[in-house]
Length: 433
Image 1 (cartoon, one colour):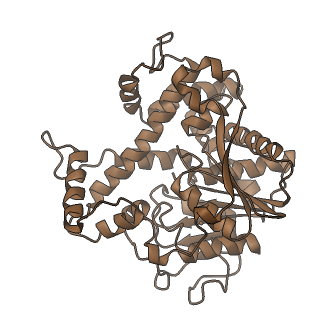
Image 2 (cartoon, rainbow, N blue to C red):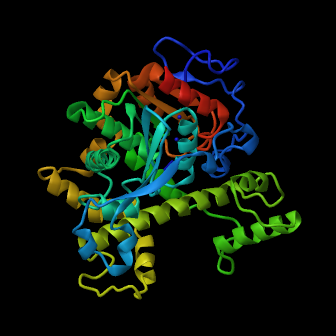
Image 3 (cartoon, rainbow, N blue to C red):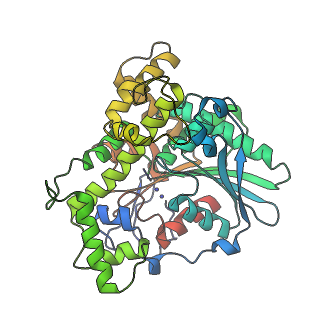
């Protein structure tokens, strides 16, 4: 799941309310061009409307690894050796500077495109930047998670906090003036729980925390995304799969262009062409991507914990073993299945018998932090009115809880306007203020 913010005077002609009400950006003044939330989610912002930021060759950055769960090196099959250590990316300034932690969204590694964009944005503004994988990614699950069963937000935050402390310990000479925190999509939810945890542990004392397009009710958000896979797509039937339909459209598009170059700019141009995907096709594409993330979680959690739900207990796995049939089985397990078979049993083990599914959903969502979010002036939220992960009442909860620390943009889908120059300027302004 993927991520934004506010402040008067920053947007010139943009209109929004003051006092303690949320900043609702006026749709007539907001220049983001994609008003279809499916298109915005996939294609993001046209290149001409993005800010000018440092390129990789201009950034002093490197990837590092942490050895946090050494017991996994022997418990995991040999072909999992690349993820027995947790990798992250650090971009550092030449001298003393504040440090920005970025938490990736659902299933995403630290090197995901959204995390990379945010790295360039904040590095260009003078921050050291650390990019962290999502606790729901298979590399974090294998190398850093204690239970390797992501979804209990407080436990995921605890794992993230230990990683952040280990990152700092690995760079004792890095001159840091202050600590800041942000996350997009699921990473936004995790950032809120990490910030709450820091109030008691006081290892970082984050000055400001920004939640970008976070899920409010985690169960609602993942259910919304899971349902997209069930969309009925015209042209898909017994003789033509969804992937064949999309591939055919892409082939015809590139044939008219005369060359092949797949990137975000191409996706925007593609949606302006005769081959553009319908809403149903776009929904299926987004839903399929999310289902793969859930399958990754279900597969990896079952493998590490030897639960036998997907891979039989004791099944011999070596570097040459094909895992395809097991991953196909994992793809049949949606988020409801993952909650029922793996998350709820862990919840009841770690929370004194647990309780109902509804109780768990409340505790892993932003509802659990309502009092903290109301009282903590350092935390703010950016969201989009047309975000695919929002359910009925979610924006209402954010308005009551965040007040003028919530900014709602009229368009952008799920994190699609994160790299729009207006949103980017607002993000920087929030952290500067």
